[in-house]
Image (cartoon, rainbow, N blue to C red; front, top):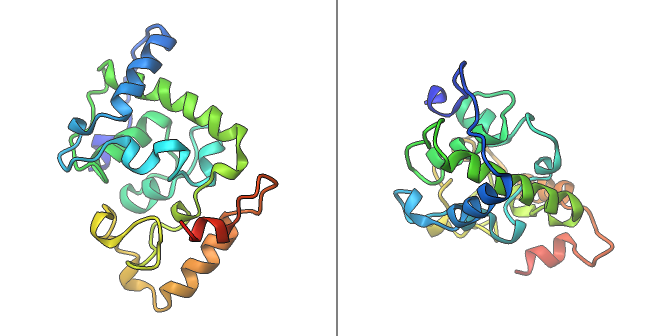
Length: 185
């Protein structure tokens, strides 16, 4: 499956007007018909939520889902989009020479800039993809596309580990955000 989400050797991104691509990418971000399970990108990432703090880092960089599920040490933004298409959205990856992939990349670059401008946007619920069912307040069991997470079976004390990981991932912010505020959602 790694081959489906990893850039081909001869990959050349579609070139076009970045503003037009970003507008089209925003439409696609909310389009649940891209998936086979009714999810859209916004299901997990609407309103800058669901991103780990590393989303602020320049691509390529390490992403937990890319490493844990696909064995990729680092991913480019277009590869991360493909990973999300295949894993949570249960769909085929987008065609590498399509207009859709660079459109989502252009929109996600704008999202990344917005995220970088708000260091409190990091979602503590995204800090631990291995959080056990019932512990993650942002991912109810029935709607969690990652419920088949192989990490959960290997975790003898998931509640304690999740609480520690969340506390580390969510700094107290001058805007009033805090782990306690996030946990009360």
